[in-house]
Length: 518
Image 1 (cartoon, rainbow, N blue to C red):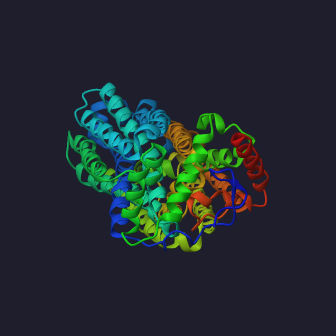
Image 2 (tube, rainbow, N blue to C red; image 1 turned 60 degrees about the horizontal axis):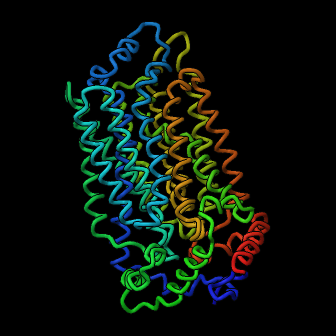
């Protein structure tokens, strides 16, 4: 059994889709423990997302590093939307993302040589170092240096961990296992917002506790990465076939028949090795155009949902609509709890309902919530120079933001990690994931740097801006994303070959592969 129209190592062709030939999709204790350890890499990314937004509105933090922001907040004529408009303050948050972008590209090449497990370990160590720098910061330079170390750690782990999960999990439950990365990311965000809620009450140095406790999830990552084995695909790629087969047997179960799956892994690796060009150069070929489109579209649309700025700046948003500092942080805690619950729901339905269905349903709900928030802000904030709105409307914004967060956590939140980790063939898998993460982090850098300025300039219309993009991306996913649930990674080309639009490019890829075999 094999896949239609794709050459094997011996020059023949494989036909059919092996969707049911791999073991039985059995979930073993070994694969659960291994995947949970890898998925815990999401903790450090999530903790940073949660902690940075809360810290940037803490009075003790602003007094230490940005006293001018406090003075402007107290100004009688300050626009309600412009309370936190300071480029150096937003640079504290955004510097992590540009560092993460650079490290994710480096991680692609490093992964091929040392494996995914070593890259996750390196990322944990770098994040741990960054947490120490931030907690001990005496000036803005130390803050930014610490943030960049955190970014290097995030870039390494975000590139390696989702691929590790996709290559390790049984095909039938790959979506649920890969979603675990996002579950831990949200769990890290929740831990950070709860930490901020309590440290916000500590005068003078509460921000140091929040930033320093980032070392806890980093330590978990380091210890976990020490004990997890590398993936079978990565081991075969680096020439350790015997270790790869033993690793596959261990995670699938001692009595599982892994022959078919292991042979397909070997074939995929051999196809990748026959290509003399590098992965990034190969992506220029016409036969890989569908991968390039998704490589750019998914992270771009993810950032244009507006969720990254809501996750990071939710305390700032809640203070903008009238909550005091402590209630603003509490609002972020509520959002994190809602997000965690929605990711839990997504974990159970992603391999049943499918990826496209969740993208469509989540997108429609997100668009509705953003339009409603924009309407409330337009009608009730900033009129007649008021710096707050009526309390019942403030709670309305909180409720709609919770609905939006739930819809995001059901769809784009986890699927942003699931889909890119499973759609790329072996020869471009590391490069494709690296480019996806690099694009996402670059856009996150841009958005976190300019969001406060956009809020100040566009005011309520910024939510109409994001709602328009959600409409575009929902239509795009409905029309151009093929369904990938339950398909083994090594059979993924067949999904594109059956798509009404992308099949023409898959035929070109087949021709390119046959030329390379001659």
